[in-house]
Image 1 (cartoon, protein in one colour):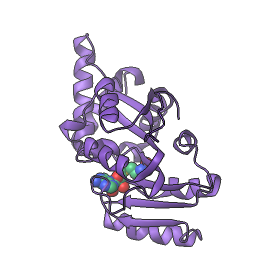
Image 2 (cartoon, helix red, strand yellow):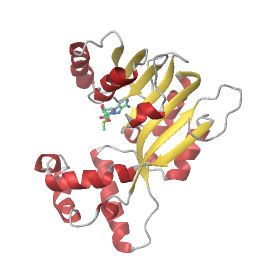
Image 3 (spheres, protein in one colour):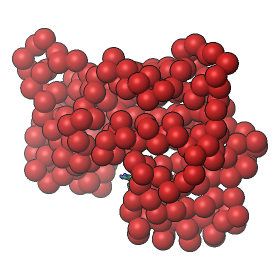
Length: 239
Ligand SMILES: C[S@@+](CC[C@H](N)C(=O)[O-])C[C@H]1O[C@@H](n2cnc3c(N)ncnc32)[C@H](O)[C@@H]1O
């Protein structure tokens, strides 16, 4: 919802959603924002196959096309869309910088990029908190196969977006709307807790005694928006 709103998605837009997972957001966007078309790209064949059936059952197969392909080598022509989105997945692309090059290539001039992404915070001065950061980041990096090249803090992250050619860049933290709820859910829902990596469960059980701010202190959950220049001159700020 937030991602589509940030992208100002509307009926004139062709979207490309990379790493679509179960494509729930694509069907929800189609229902609420009615873009002209969404192309989903996903590297996992099983998700593509199953999600095509789900899209078909929702009667959206003519407006949502799900395709096997990588965010870092999109099987799409230049300047073919208006919006590129990546929800909770750019952190594990090899590499995020390669994805940004593609995310710049496929939109038309003036096209928008919106990412719900996870990057790193600066190391905490206090030793205990720094150790928590190291532990939780390493668990996250292991579970989601996050390449070391993607472990950016906010300033280099913004620099990569700008180096990718985007002229309007806005990166804002939204972790306070995500992490406290996740922390509570992990404490209260055994099925969700069981989805943590096996070797992380015991240490994580101890972390449940700490507050969310400490446990998630390694993570900067951001909403990043950027625009491909039209050539007419645009400045940084919201889309
Ligand atoms: C953590 S899930 C996020 C799914 C979805 N966007 C969501 O928010 O529910 C990551 C998704 O990215 C996909 N993925 C991983 N690497 C990819 C790549 N190089 N190109 C395209 N999709 C990729 C995975 O198959 C998976 O569907």
